[in-house]
Structures are given as C-alpha cells and as structure tokens.
Length: 172
Image 1 (cartoon, one colour):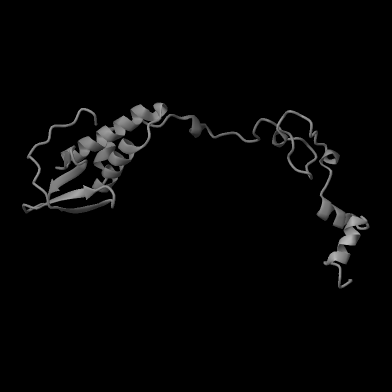
Image 2: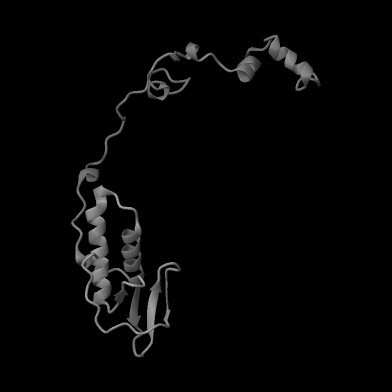
C-alpha cells in the first residue's frame, strides 16, 4: 500500500476510524459488547470464558476424578526404609528435620525422620548431635567417614573417632 502506512501519516487512518479491523487492533473492543458486566462485584474470570465462547463457564468441573485418587495411601512401615540407600535416608533425615513445620503433616514428618534415624543406626552410622553429622567406620579399617549435608556426599572424617555406641535420641 502506501509507504507512509506505518508512520505518522498512517496514524491518521486509525484516528479517522476508516478501517474496522485496524480500529479493533489499535483501540481494542468494548467489553460490554461481549456480554461482560464491568460493574458487577463478582470476578470476571468466574463467568467469562472467552470472547468466542457461546456459553458461560460452569462453576463445577467438567471431569470426574478416578476412584484411585480417593484411596488413602498405605501406612508408613519401617520395612520400606530398609530398601533405601544411605543417601536417600540422609536426605529424608535432614530434609524433613530442617523443613519449616506445617501442623497438618507434622506427625508424618516426625515419623519419617525417626524411621530414617533408626535405619541409619542399624546400618552402623552414629549421629553426632553437637556437630549435626552422621559418622561411620570404613569397613576393614580404622578410618571414619561422615555425611556432609551441604555437599550431599560422604567425606573422610578427620576429627576424634566417635564413641562406640550412641544412645538413640528421643527427639528423632
């Protein structure tokens, strides 16, 4: 078309409202023509689906949840924790011990920490409460290793060897 269509002279055709499509693009659409009551106190998204929809939105979902969603999960058992590797147990222990508490899941979180704690003790790990680390003896030697929570890896333990038996903590 004209070379000045996108310049200042092209703006004149928008201002004069000569092209309906260009006016809709530049100026938008009057929403009340689409059936919206802009003075209503309700939220618009609750009743307006789209400008191309013929019906209003229904408040109930148009799907049915499968029955399996309503089944309660099985009870948590300590035997599950015997199948986890040490790294998973460390993750469970530290993650649920240090996460902010929400009252709804507090009992479950305490159980997860307790079961991970007990399984790590059964595998020969000892929890050092003062330094908040897990330590164990390397098999076949007098060396020890510990779990570094920050790096999520096992590292050589260079401190004093832990006592032989650590009594289980009541808080875990």
